[in-house]
Image (cartoon, rainbow, N blue to C red; front, side):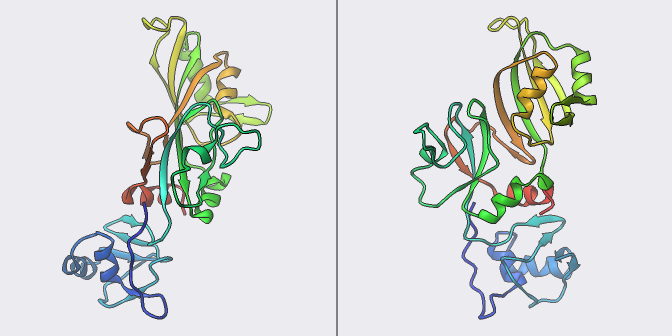
Length: 256
């Protein structure tokens, strides 16, 4: 997602109702009605005065409780990272990396966090370096959902253990939720189980280490969700723009 071109005055400000309209909230008249009704909040304060000016790149604006992302020339992308791709923009060893996957893009992109080389799924990319840095910082961690195919049959007692937490070499870890998606008696993969788990942590190879610790080494691992952003039906190696609402919800979930 990239923001619309919003003309500003010499101080970089724009009338609030104009900004709302150009951001696709509603017509300008309807935006004025929303302001007068007390439905627009800027930086924590209800704004009802028509003609109020704001900085479109910095103001935190909510309309009827929904976060409006700041106007920005930046792009925010969702990638379905293929298995076997290194989570770097270049690789001195010549391995296939993210830079190869997005080589057709004109922007200088950064990856938000990373996925193991042998893990596929949802990865965020942007040319907004500040956003990438903040989102990757441990203090801004949001829930991430993974689907893992593991060795053996996963019993309820193991699910309970994962929820209650286990002690790894680098400290304790617990999942927010976990469930079995497909059991080991599946026609195609006997002796295996597919589980879906939600975890808040971002430590190195945390999901693989966690599942191995409880006796179920990971055979395949895919990240399907980061906060409110879902992988959906995006094909392996495909990109899509992060939706306007998705970005607002993501900023909220990370408390940015």
